[in-house]
Picture 1 (tube, rainbow, N blue to C red):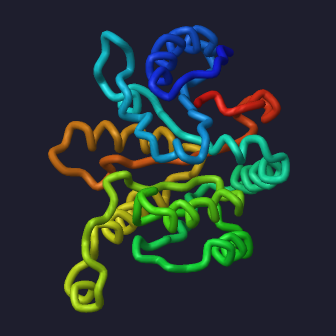
Picture 2: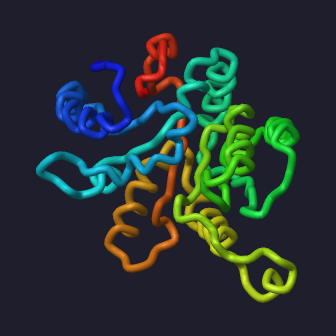
Length: 238
């Protein structure tokens, strides 16, 4: 495993340089590819799935391989890793998908109360109607991470529609439509298979003129699939 501390502008180049080496370590008979970025909180909205696959391949990385992101801070916390592992052990006994908890783009709920609510509901998947464009939306995202939710999804395309009562009665905003599509297309997918399903959606979105999954970010973390948290001793980005 390669590791280094990098300036932000060097990260894409570094990933491209080492990606090919990582594939050499995959078990050809039993292994499969999954590219996971463990990033600081302010990088969770970074479009890593849109980075070029290589110097000679301009196709988006997320169209070439399943790509997920993980919160570096959560990777370091044994308490949250313990709860995530327990959640996945429960999910292993299920064959159906998860019920998605919706956080609407105009939500003004208290982040701490959302954390407690998600724990009480034993929520395993959360969809957000808005991107990480404000302090409020970032606090609501942190609520899901603190609740040890296994899967979190939002669209970087965001929602620029009005949310006043007059317009809300006439049509659903883009954030609500994104959450509707999320429930319709992903609710039946077992969470363990979600990175591959999102990989397919990203290919469809890239080839389409318009697609609900454009800019989709997937936070997906099964601790059993990744190295122990002690390897992440500091942020790899400055």
